[in-house]
Image 1 (cartoon, helix red, strand yellow):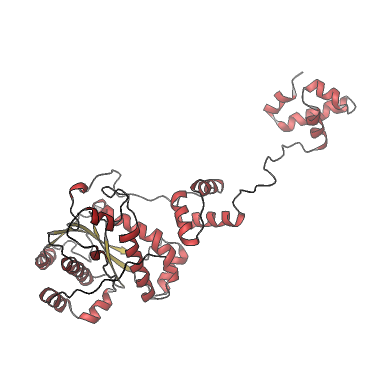
Image 2: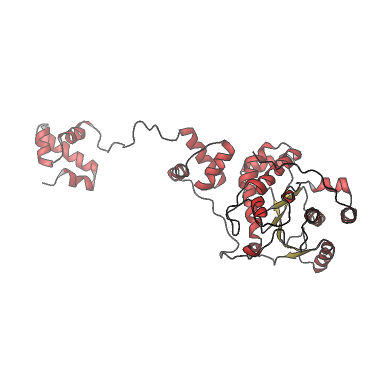
Length: 370
């Protein structure tokens, strides 16, 4: 006769049903039934007195198990943000102070079947845009604007808070390729006037901090810069040439040429807007948080990209042994509308700062975010 263990490979429920039939045939004799089907007597009693299905092997007490409230939080934040375990672990630590192992977060996401939010890439091939080892600080820049109100990148509640509280909608971002230092401004509107004002303000700041070499700026092909207008591009480059700079728009659709600044925009969403935007009831508080975020980026946040080797922009600048002081990284994050209200038209702005004398003031210490 086939044994109980062979029957279990087919169906545990059927195997226990056969045990009950053999027990009935032998007037309930447990020992005789165990001798016929080859299970233990305990197994025979279990089949006689218990259910036909296998019992759960889940332990009754798990002292090291993640609390249910934490697991629900991890699951909800994973679905809301679309992060995988590594980014989600860092996100939970920064926003909630919840310190967990990456493996724990990974297991919770897998157990609750939280799917990854996929992102489409512009260019499937990885190419080096620069000779990073040969670059000098503040010689090559990437310039782009970011639409802060992005429903695809932000959670719904963060998006609606930013929209209703009057927080600036656009970020103007200039990034140095060699050190990954960033210079940012904000505005409520997107226009070429603000674009030119931001570029000139950043260039004046750089020249005032002993940066003497030529500056090349690779810019987005947006309407806020020089999209499709050669006369506009020539006019801009003629005026920027007074500051030793050249603006070079990328071809349409070639967003991979601005990969560094685009990657920084993703970091803005994940480490700044998702966490701190809801804590800003108005524009002034947002600008203060933005200043702290820029200082965190320039002074405290290590970068693992090509040519950086885990250094912060300040450490990279000091390692280059250039004659540029780190005070250049303390660029003020301004609201461009306020800039025009306080200074006036752009012609007066250029005349005052190019013809005037730069007065050195004592720099404030950098501020870490959060």
